[in-house]
Length: 194
Image 1 (cartoon, rainbow, N blue to C red):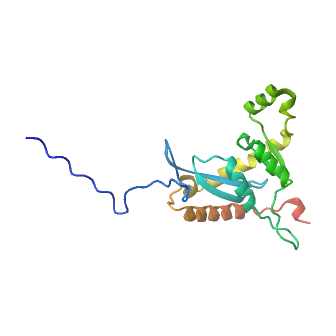
Image 2: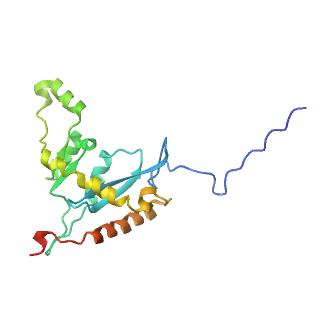
């Protein structure tokens, strides 16, 4: 006599677990599980200005343009808000020809380190490789403001762990924590006191 086959397991009531494959909920799958990435612009005092979320496996460079288009900085006097920063400091992930051309078109000064493979490729091409992009080491050192902003955000457990399933709820959590970061840093700059 052969044993009876095991009964088939039915999926959960909601149809089983589904992974957000198209990125609507900014959840991505990796070897560590579900992941999320927050792309942000921060000011020099490590306060968040603009952010977008995406699945963890999505690259940084394709998200730069949507983040910059979301930027609106209010002026002190009358007038419409500024839509571009004075300078953008980015790591090697943002060093592509298209990104640099976009920033030049918008008249945004860029301080972005160039990866070794791009530098070596340009050297191999000789004169046809063109001249290297301008790079200011003193400005690049100030790029740590974005890293400090992420560190401030991760002091909040709800941001560091992302308990929220839905992207709009997680964005609300990011907004509340950004407000808390701005309220903690209420010291006025010397130029603002006059």
